[in-house]
Length: 418
Image (cartoon, rainbow, N blue to C red; front, top):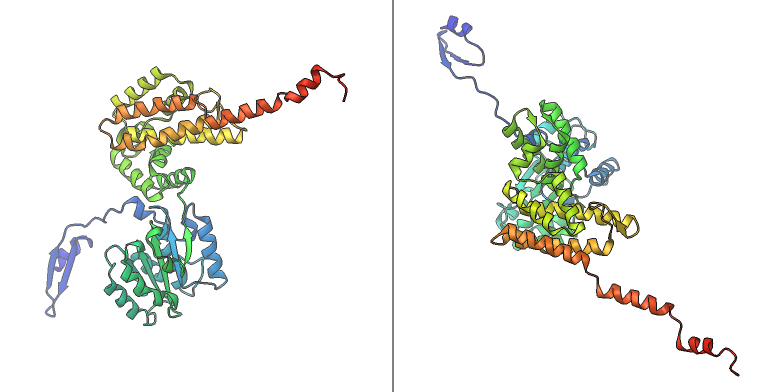
């Protein structure tokens, strides 16, 4: 039996030796490491890894360096912008070996245990499933105990807005005067539902949607490490789909790897998610600016026949028109960014307003194609109309330039006696 054991690979052999010298041999199949999605594998582990939230990182770094660490923090922002990741990194900085320090070693055993969720003094709580007053009362009892491993006992409560009103009220006193070894970090996507009395006891940090260039840069780094060949246009489409969320971008990128393999092109992303290419989007915007009704109908027909998401098309078109509006403002009130046809700021604003009003009809209407066509044609008409208040201003300016009746009479009889 022992001879058999030496012939077997260590990965597949497991033996139990008895006092008599005999060995109980068990052979198991080789277990492959569980696959980890990109969003988890490339989750930020240090402050330097956090993308697009420099104002938050700088404040937390300075607070640690100057020993001005508050007892409660509230991270607010859209999904996938790094709220929970930043909370974990902050916990690592506080409870790392020889901490608190902002530039900690991610390979430190304490930091590794926090990342794995096994650190005794870093407690993560899901506010959606632990939203009752009983859970908060249990928390109030455990905060009194001193830390077992690190310097601080840190409670990270995700989706804190899901707590009930009774749970919030039970937390108020503890949150206002916690023991010196306790720190609270709250994360929420809906700050309006958090009681003002809770917000006033926290330092609030608003995490912003991550700009598309930063998302693209991060995805390039991931693609290089994962040996994925992907075009710049494909990454731009992924960033456009993510809407400022890094986690969404990584999840979309992960799905595209599963679909395409080691080579991803723009057409693949367009086909999977029903997006419209940048060239066709620019052509549709140019048709809007030129008022070409026939071209608008033709382009919408092509997009619908190709199976594109028309609601997403309308959202992307709004972003395109908004860029031209910003360009018009920067150029003093007029822009030719939409297909070379010069439009005023007022015209572009009216067009954008009609596109915005048509969102619900395209998303929820019975026929998204017809509703999109009507919305686009209304946007053309709105860009051609003039606001009554602007007309009144022009008439007032013209009337101010006209001579008054007294001045006209004086011109007719300049030699009349006084």
